[in-house]
Length: 111
Length: 114
Image (cartoon, rainbow over all chains, first blue to last red; front, side, top):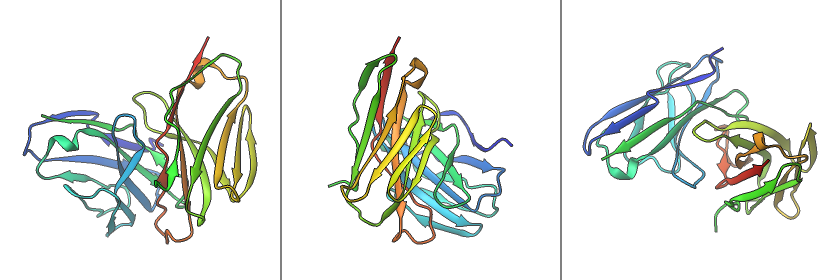
């Protein structure tokens, strides 16, 4: 099992550009999550999904969008990148809605 | 007041020391308590998982939950340089519905010096 995979690992965007952060899991988990982690801070939930076709906002959803067309994939879309979105983004999945398994992260810089 | 409070440190100890990491919380609905370990430039990995109050031991690691005081702890015995990482507490419980959402502490950075 590859677990939770994320692409790309690093990305630099210009202000106003768009991009999609990819996340996939091969554990057949229903629950998937997107977090951002700023330096010295904990994890803040952006969006989450409890199953294919079902998504909902977390603590900091503004500036982001998600979709969940399959159990395996949960992409995160940034439409108009802003410097405030410079962060490390983690995708996670879980099977019993408590023990979450994390991907390696995507480091995003917006200049 | 944040739902979960955790001293960010950094905490520096000599190899072999006993380390105590702590979190306090305000939501009495929390029932599930976790500790994640995050190495530099890596994703968090689950270290300990506890339901409700009590202790749980796994090798050199012991997790304690005191729901009456809304206080959880992680103890590391015989600390090793390989334990140097950021430790995040996380919690969940009733009132979160069937979402699996976790509330994380800020994380405590630990350095174990050889």
